[in-house]
Image 1 (cartoon, rainbow, N blue to C red):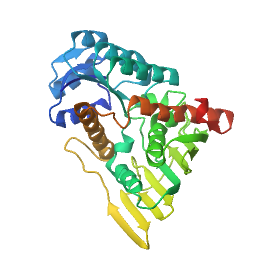
Image 2 (image 1 turned 45 degrees about the horizontal axis):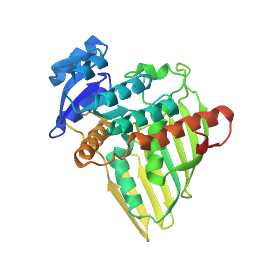
Image 3 (image 1 turned 180 degrees about the vertical axis):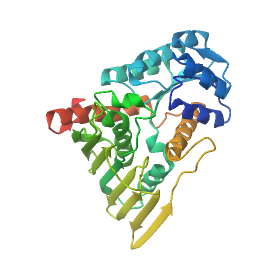
Image 4 (image 1 turned 120 degrees about the horizontal axis):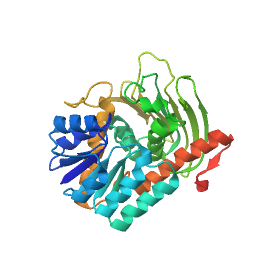
Length: 339
């Protein structure tokens, strides 16, 4: 299976490492408008075919899928070009700048008969996955309350300076992941209430967000995100969970400790992710999830399955992001039917 990658920036190196580790997959072409990034990635991974223009790359072809690792404003034209070229697509999050673009991309892939998956990797972190699997197995009965929390003071701006520039920040960049975990745990959402705050005066967007979600299945969840939390030890990039069910409780605590209490018993497991040969702490948690989600994409292509984080599925996560911003701006609860 041959692939191409568009965007050779900060995070894309993780994707290139992960593709190299998947049996039967080879990235045969890469594309970036920055010649320095393009050649650095090409030299590091031994990729001969290098392009500064994606349309030229699609015209030459020779690959089965494309990995779009660029920022959201470029996604729609690139996804539509990929669909027109007849290749499968995995696209970085945020999927789109708005719901209209997201729906158009899903429609383009469906019309071409090609798989479209969003690189929504947080739900694929092995620690989070252990919690999802335990909950779905009925380990604590039927859940009725949950908290999905990511609070940190880690300097994310050093590696990704553009994060400080946009009018939107933490919900769009990080909260989208945490909201997606809430969906994976508790199902779809009927309404959301959100509040935001900018603590760091050197950035343009919000760096703190708290969201209350009402899920169709009866669960109430709190999703909270912060890049302004000063704590020691630093827990970046861990997502922490607290879930109450009819038969017990589940917690994913700092240090990757999963505790399940039910039936008068308590069990704590170490669900720490491995540090892959090309990974480094503290990013190893996210880096492993990149390898897992890309393997899932390949497995789905080989077996003719719909990816768990398909473009169609991700419309619901993106709608939560848009609804959260609307709620914070207007100071009210927003129904997802409005999206």
